[in-house]
Structure formats: C-alpha cells, structure tokens
Amino acid sequence: MNDDQISLSRAEQALENGSAEEAIRILKRLIHEKTDNTDAKALLGEALIETGHLEEAVLVLEDVVSQLPDDFDLQFDLGTVYFELGRPDDACQVYENVLSQDPDQTDARVSLGLIHYHQERMDEAESCYRQALKRNPESAFALHSLGDVCFATARNDEARKCYEKALELDTEDPQGHFNLAEFHYDNGDLKESEKHCRRALTLDSEFSFAYLTLGNICLDQEQIQEAVQCFKEFLKAEKSPASKEICSEVAALIEGLTSEF
Image (cartoon, rainbow, N blue to C red; front, side, top):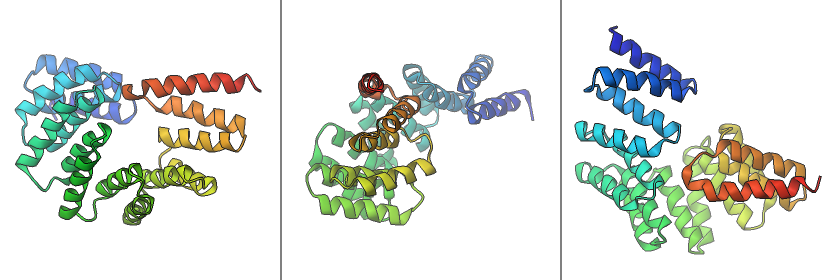
C-alpha cells in the first residue's frame, strides 16, 4: 500500500468513525499533493456533505463528476446537494442526465419525482413514480414516494397500501415504519403511530423526524417531559440546512414547554 492509499484509508476510517472533519483535513492535503486523485475527491465530497459544507461539496462533486461521468453514485450525491441548496433545476438536470445514460436507474426517476413533489407539481411527481414502478415494481423508494403523493391528494387508502407494500418488501426499513407512523398520526390513531415511530427509532436511532412525530404524539397525550426529550433528540439529530426553520420552531416549543415544568 503506497502513501496515497494509506491516506485514503485513514480518511475512510475517520469518516466511518464519525470524524468527518479529520477526514476532510486528510483528503484536502492528499488532493493538494495529487490533484488528479478522483477517489480522494469523491470521498471529500461525501465528508463535506456529512459536515454540512454543502457549497464546498458542490464544487468538489462537480469537479469529480466531470472526470467520472459514468459514476451514478456521485451524480446522485450531486443532485441531492443541489436540491438541499435550493437549486431544483440543477438537480433535475443531474437526474435527467443519469436517465439518459441508463433508463433503468429507477432511483433517478423517483428523485426527479421528488423535486416535482416538493414544488407541488403532483401530477408530474406521480407520473415519475409510476414510471419507476413499471420498471421495478419492487422499488420501496418509489412505493414510499407514490404513497406520499396519494396521501397529499387525499387518496388515503391508496397511500396506506403503498406504504404497507413497501414495508412488506423490507420489514426492517425505518423509513417504511415512519411513513406508516405519519399516516396513522394524521388519521388520529396515536397508538399505531407510536408503535411505528418507536420501531423506526429502534432501527435507526438518528432518524430525526421520527423523534419529532413521537414528540407530537407524547404532547397530544399530555406527556410533556417525554415530548420535550423527543424534541431535543430531534434537534440533536437533524442537521439539514433545509430544516433550519422547523428546528427554530421546535427550539421555541421546547422553551415554552420547559417553562411549564
């Protein structure tokens, strides 16, 4: 193993151990010495995303994607960062580029649908999800997303069936349990919602929005201390810049609730 490989291995280990800033330091030094090291650039992009340095991550990912145009994982990372930064048109271009290279990349089609969904273009979003499911009927990602658009357009039975089918495909998927938790919460079934929330958190202890929903369930049942603890866990786990506003609202809610103790 040469020096470059040793540095790359150290950076990978640091990232796996939760020391993303240390990984960034190692990788930047390596890239400074070997500017053509695409493996280091790809890992640097991942580490920058992990630490929330999204503007810098975009520059790194744009560079490495131009050098590795067939690496779909890198293109997905770039599309995600564009979306997080409020650049939906750029994200769409990335996913459309992936699909032009490989129409069977159903995750790209679903990701394209998610952009339409968040811009409230429900018909376009649903079309993307259904096209994805035609190519891969067992895509849990597509089923979850189709469930969301059905739920948003008041087709509750169809939404529930989508969520349940997705969970049948992978019973250990925390997203599947969370989607059902949200569905049951909005339909007033707090007991069933709590069950799925807790299962999601058992499977993924850093699932931020499961803490938020569980906090709301506790609050609805006047379990104030438990609700505050859940809301604190939400703030600890949720790091996305896109969630800045909701994090501020939750922080204010915690302050108001703790004054009641």
